[in-house]
Structure formats: structure tokens, C-alpha cells
Length: 272
Image 1 (tube, rainbow, N blue to C red):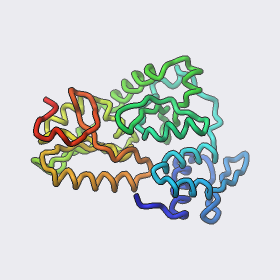
Image 2 (cartoon, rainbow, N blue to C red; image 1 turned 45 degrees about the vertical axis):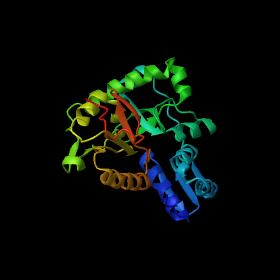
Image 3 (cartoon, one colour; image 1 turned 120 degrees about the vertical axis):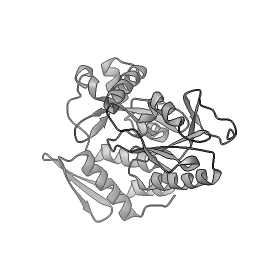
């Protein structure tokens, strides 16, 4: 994994904060300080300590940036009720390390563990952004994480109606199916099992599913080992260069259920 420079790390935090809080005025001061003015107060934050932690553990980049965003400009709006939010609650696939990091810094996300290195967090979708639901808010609503999951998947199904089918690239053993609608929930569509099974019938060999970041889900078959290696390289690149990385791990389908792909079942197709 290529390490970001201090300047690149600071720019990444700046870009993320601009996207998360378009109402605030944000400015980098050199490459180690960030100034935020939200109309009521000004805050200056040092990025040096976070960069040092990132340089020691680059795989924690997303978790560290999320923690910085919460420190720099926490959302002080009144929490909406469940009734106000229920039609806008959606699942967001995240690395399990992000959930663990949120627990350590005292802002635990409402989330459920999933398969491999994946977890499912929950967000309230808004026109220009979304906000994560935290465990404290879930408890105030008196709901369980399984209740949120059922509600979020139903909303994702509704959101996905009318979208075009995944893009087909290549043919034969090199056929690749790409989910890329850029609405922030492409990786989360791995939860829509029926669509996955329909897509899996099109690829040769066992289906492999990758979720390198939130705006990109890909499926291809393992019939051509050389092509599988190419896709592993592409997955690493997509994961390293996106601002919302999720996983480099390969997944497959066993009996209609997502499972970690171990590469040992090439000769016997595991779906349909």
C-alpha cells in the first residue's frame, strides 16, 4: 500500500470535510493544520498526530479520517426521530476496522458484522450527504441493529428499482459485471441477493465479487486464473485510490449466501 505524504493526507482530509460539511468554510494552514469556520465559531485542528498514526498503520486510514471529521466539525443538529428518518435509512458497507475504531473513540457506529472483513453500518441519506447512525441514537430509538438492517435493505431495494443492470465489460471467461451508479451505495448492493444470483449465472466458473470502495462493485468468474490475477491487481488499485475504501478481499456465493472466496473450488461451480 503506497503511503500518502503529509500534504496528500491533509488534502484528503480537506476534501472529505468539504464534502461532508458544505455549509462550513474550511482552509488548510500549511500541511499540518486545518481551520474550520461554521458561522458561529472557528476551530483549528492539528493533523500531525493523526498522520503519525496513519503512517504506522496505513490500513487504518479511513478510520482515522472519520475520527478527524468528527473532531473537526461535529454535527450539532437535533437528532431526527425514527419516524422522520425511516424512509431515508440505508445500509453502508464499511470495513470492520472502521466500526472498531468508532468504538475506541467513543462514537460507536450502529453496525452489524458481515462476512470476512466487512461490516454493515447505517446512514440517514440526505440530498447532498449522508450521516452515520450511532449506537446511542439507535438506543434512543429503542430499535435493534437487526431492525435497522431489515429497514435499510428494504429502502435499498426501493432505491435500486429502475437502475440499469450492471455494466458488462468483456466476454467469455473475461466477462466483468460492474455496479457503478455513483449514488454512494453500489457496494451495499451486495446485500441484494436476487440481483447477485442473476448476475452470477452470466460469468464462467465460480463468481468472484469484490467491493474495493463504496462506489464500485464488480463480479467476474474464476475460469481464467490469469484474469483473476489481473482483477486482483485492479482491485488493489481501486481500493488504494478511493476516498471511501472498503476491502481488497475476494468473495463468492455459496448457496446464495456471500462467503469469502478461498480459490479452492475452481473446478466445481458453486451457484446454479
